Length: 601
Image 1 (cartoon, one colour):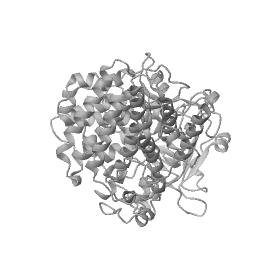
Image 2: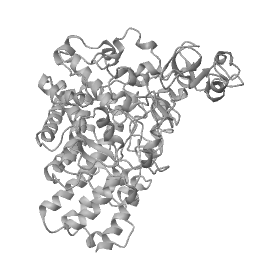
Image 3: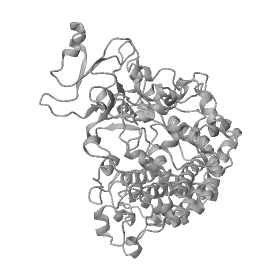
Image 4: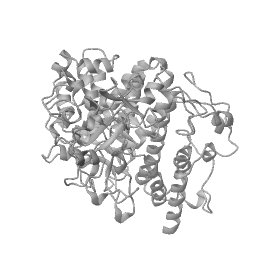
């Protein structure tokens, strides 16, 4: 039986890794094992659900959002706002993982065979429904109306090729799955690397906040009247987690180092902020690739960097000269989380005097968050060994504060028990609701013009705190979408400010590390450097030797913020409401003519 269970797990893992289409909704595992010979006990169910864990996608970046200045790999959002996305160019991304749904439904179709402890059986049913809810939450976020399948169908089932079901119906089904998961999954599995009742509550809080805000701000859905119900459910789910006493913000009094520990430590075992986390250990042969976040294919955006407050709690954008502060001075007297998220002047990957030099061709604000700090944790390509959060308590607190603000019931005590706990960790001043509402930040107000009401200032600051605390955790894209703030995707994101062409100090020691030059022949601006400096300085050119533009330029020609020729040469346009959704790949609509495109696609 032990070998049988292992075999079934391997089959499920293989299905989860495969590329597939609707065919996988009806296909049984290609083995000699039949449902009649399995799903007979809680142990069988446990073995099967072990294979579902491969469905977790753990993000360590914000690619495709306004937190990225430039992505050399080419993101889907860039393609879309340049009018290059269509049903023929979108590929199967986001529509090609129906095998994950089939895996959950296959068990749910056969679980009636299981005999034994009903509490244990319901626990594993809850885990399967948790993964089905997560699957459909992602589908709704991307496509809105999608076909709902509650079983793994046979190859003669006509409903296999049905059309899209209404968003409201699909969401009701997601909520039923989540409530069952919350009511039946055990609270303590002995480890927080497994799905627990608390994981289900965290997913419920995340999804209901998404759906509530999406319904409130997206009038094209005509679902605004039901938004409040979802905010109430967000608050309820968060309250269960908060009242449990099992979770708290991780702090040992080390400030920014405590924040860093959450994303670059070898283990998160025993960390009370972790609702669920993923364990990557060399001894287990399980690794990730988080070292590539640092200067590999993208940098973070100026708008993200400017979001971090000053250490006295005032906005960076309230400084009279904030737009003209160079790279090193931008980091002075800022929220400590900035230097834990963006590679700061003086950072060393080797923890010695060899300093990291940020590269201007991607914007120079290179991502540091998630980078394994200990060189021993970085063993090569897909050989990084640091633990990664899946659900953490900080997000729950942010979800709660936002839901309460949207409901109009936010009190200062709510802020003290949520936002201000996050600020306490890094020694930042508290947010005061009255002050925020009396003087809303004009920069935030311009970024989110549809935020109104008595709690406008506080809600804007909650959004700031969310962007700062959760930067690079893969949530920003959905946040901008649900707030109907798509114009932020239209913005041409910028990099660091450059006062003039020529040598630039990037490490804060007053010694130039790089030089931005008009072209390879523009060497006159280096005349003041010693021969050694000229020989060792890294040079970046606006034009190559043939006079062709490189990928970046300066805002004002010879000075200003770094900008990108791609955005200049192909104007970014965000079309509402169409671009809040994605087209179904053409091949799928040919295969199933019942699938119709929505919102202009």
